[in-house]
Picture 1 (cartoon, rainbow, N blue to C red):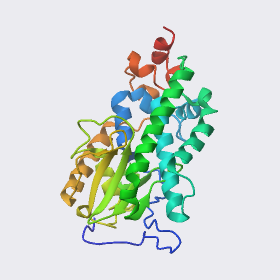
Picture 2: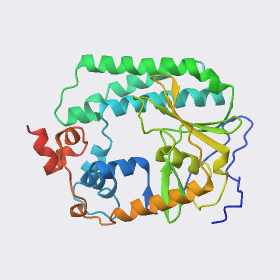
Picture 3: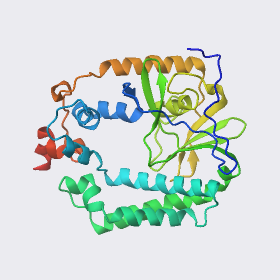
Amino acid sequence: MPLYHRQMGDLVMNEKKQIKWDFTSPWSNIRKWSKTRDNCWEECKRKYYYEYIAIQKKSTRPEKDKIKELKKLKTLPILKGEIVHEAIANYIRESVEAGAKDAPMAYFEYIWKIKEGNFKYSLVEITNGQEITNAQLIEAKSDCRILISNFEEIWPTFAEKEIMYLDDPSKIANWFMCGKFGVYAKPDLIVKDEKYIIIDWKTGQERDDDAENNLQLSASVFLACFDEKGAVRNFPNEFVGYFYYLKTKSYSEPAMRTLDDYRAFIEYVDKRMNIIPESLEAEGYAPSPIRWKCTRCQFATICKEGQVYLDQ
């Protein structure tokens, strides 16, 4: 890999559009890793099968269409986070491209109103036979409003910087070539300061392990540095990554990476991907049924091990 070669052909210099970087990657059947996929594999290999394997074109799973529908389900906490991320991204994009006419809260209220009409069919809890009360939904909306309000307070700090990249939640995550595998990454925002600052908005609680060695931030840094062919477009030492916790208006420890870190990341991804089989058969993906996991799994209704907990 020519690590000494800089390729900046992916910069979009449009006078009307100040978001300069486009990390769009073409579709490819190259096997891919992501932190989300890695977490899914560790949680339950059978869930991984339903989420990523059973729906492949080559799969002969008879209920493939049903699996595709179940895949769209979200738990209420996950859906809350997605709505907040979408509202923030839409606000920033319109602010940059045309000048947003409304405050971020208005973007949230608009998206929430659209989503709530479909809660009955989009929430894992309801599909799995659990009750979501009106009080729970009111509390969820209130939690989201607090996060958006906190974003409104801190956004001017970022708005004064040059925006280089902004995620579009409606599009599939971008990916880059990492050794012989692809890696999905989805940074929320990149702005230019003394270094390029990568921001990942966090809507939940702060975690003790979201610090220097977090793989999610590593993937975001390396996406900004390498493309789907493995060519270099920037260098890791030009970036610093942070999780920004909207609940507490606080940063994680900074994540800074080197080319040596990238080589170590390649080795890690290679090791992890070699554990995961390429089989299209469910038998190659053993379930690990536990009540707390199965009741919040979107595939529990078609998984005989998961159904046991739904029937109790």
